[in-house]
Image: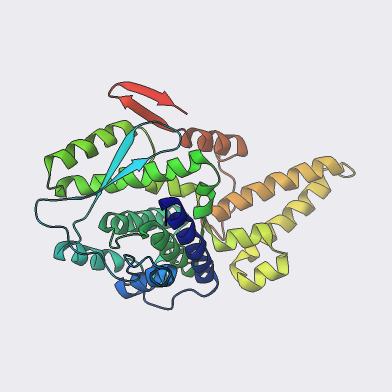
Amino acid sequence: MTPEQRQTLEADYTFKRVAELELYPVRGQFDAAHLKEVNRRIFQDLPGLGLNEVTPGEFRAPVPDGLDWIKQRALSTVDGSFYVAYSRMDYAAKTRLDTALQKANPDELRNLKTAEFTARLAKLYVELDYMHPFSDGNSRTLRSFTRQLAAESGYDLDWDRFARSDVGRDLLYIARDRSVNELAIPHIQHDDTLRKVVHTQDRFEGNRGLPDLLRDAVRPSRAVAFEQLPEQEALREYPELKEAYKTMRKATEYFALKMPNQFDGQAAGIQSVLGHVQRRLDDGETASFSRSRGNGPRERGQELQERQTLIYRSEPGQELER
C-alpha cells in the first residue's frame, strides 16, 4: 500500500466514525478513559484493514530521557518547515493530563459567558494537545472530544470553519502549534529541538494563539437556536430566550409607531435591533440587550478582518502578510 493509498483508506474510515460520534457521542466523564474511548472509536477499523501499527484507544509509549517528541509541519500558504514539540508522555505528563481534564466539567463550564468559556476551552485543548497522548490521530480525537464537551456545556464549537480554505487550515495549525510550543519550550530535552522550535516561534510571531482564534468558532447553542429555529421551537429548547424575543416584539411595535407607512425604514430598524440582540446572545447574554457603543456591524467586521490576518516571518525581521 502506498502512502497515498494508506492516507485515503484511513481518511475514509475515520471520517465515518467521527460522524458517528456526532450522533452517538461517548458517554463518559470527560476524563482520560473518555478521551481514550473517543480515539478508539475513531480508529477502531484500521488494525483490521492491515494498519497494524495503529493502536486505537492506547496512549503512546514514553519518550526516552534526553529525547523529544517533535513534529515537522508543512503549511499550504507559505514555504518552509515549521516544528512543534510535544510532551514525552512520561509519568509527569500523564499526571498533568489528568489534572487538565479535571477542568472538563460541563456543569461548571455552562455557567460561563462566551469569552470566558472560550478561553477555558482553548486552554484545555492546548494542554491536551501538548500532551499529545496518542501515537496518531490526536487532532481528530481532540476535536471530537472538545466538540462534545462544548455541546454538553451549552456551546457550539465549529471546528469545520477552519477546514474550508487553505488559509483557514493554516490559521488553525499556527494557532495550535504556537500555543503548544509555549508550553513545550521549558521541557525540551535536546538543543537541536529547542533551536527548531524557537525559530518556528519567531516565524509565527504576530499570529493569533488558539485562545484568540477560537473566538471565531464558539457560540452559545441558544444563540444558534435564536438565529436558525422558529420562535416556538427555540423557546421550547431554550426558555431563557424569552427576553430576546420580547425585545424583538417591542422593537417591532416601536418602529411601527414611529415610522407609520415607512415599511422599508421599519424593516431596517428591526434588522438593526435583531443584529444587536444576536450579538449579545453570542456574547452569552440572556437578559440585558441595551445598546453600547463600538459594537456595531462595522466595528465587528473590521475586528474580524484584522484578526484573520496571517503574518509569517521568513527570516527574523522580515514579515510577509497573506
